Length: 495
Image (cartoon, rainbow, N blue to C red; front, side, top):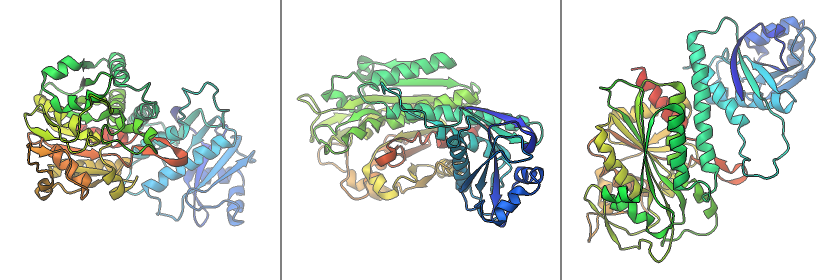
């Protein structure tokens, strides 16, 4: 979808569709008031007859309204005056864009940035509108030999403004467009099957991204990983014929003296559980176990598209977790890059085994902060469902920054405990630690395991098992937490 800002008078705009808002009590948004006046009060008449519902998210499509140049008008309900939340705003934009597209329009003009949402600015609403509209337009059918018939939808969306767009509004539009591209990349990677999206495919994607946007990408092969002493990472790869990769991306948008932020993404391109085999039902969805890696690549795509003045490093350990005669077994003990030994009690707790070596590798950058992103535990899905990301942090200021970024981007996190009490569950009789701590507090003990490798810098862990993927009828990748990570980085540039 193409996006633009357009200065125009709503009633004179020659568009296939104009979109305006209506609050309960018959109060139209400023653009709606202009349309109502141009139509000699026609919209008000409809509202009084309850033919224009104002319930939040409800939409009414009107054709050929006298006095209005646009072919169609969509009136979207905004609920009671003063009640529109950020979620409600996003839902209203989504409903309106879908209504315009399903009504036959291929392009539309939406006056949504004038809708008041407490705690947001016009630029905030601009970015959110672009992100939401792009979500409505997203389709994944690249692997279908026969494409589904077009169901209708917008190809172009202009955000209407009453005066000449400001530099801040133009910047917000550009950031929203870059974010949408990053989310789309993360979705595509998550939706691809594992016979396509292999560790090598992720490496090629990173190289292509680096070449297109002129940042450094290094891909370490098996021998390089072995030389580094990443015994924990390599233990996961023992059961598969697919070569592992360790992808390093370095974007230098900040000053030379500025310490980088390091993003570490779990890249298990398929997870059978290994010898601790998962149940067969639903195992096809384990192609999305590389969503942490996908979110790092998606965030890089967004950041370079915005040309953010930040130094950013992306680390992606990527491999498959497969059962075979050479696979690691429960009871085996491996040595991590840090020198700490790990007793493998469950081979399906493999994400932490590849992440811990990447966290040790991150030390060489003397980072300002490290955030790892992983579809790590089913326990987090049980705890938080598919609404919030489970967030753990060893610094309160980093946790607060992620929480604030989550609310602003509507890609929210919930802070979970990282208390030493839980470390007791990881004790092993035979090694420095076990890789699982039993059923109680499974997401917490997984984070506590990683915390042992992240003591030398500010660190946060995002367990995205519940939010990176949708099951059921709308099955597919969500692209989260690219909005959260991007907002977090944007805010660091504004300090």
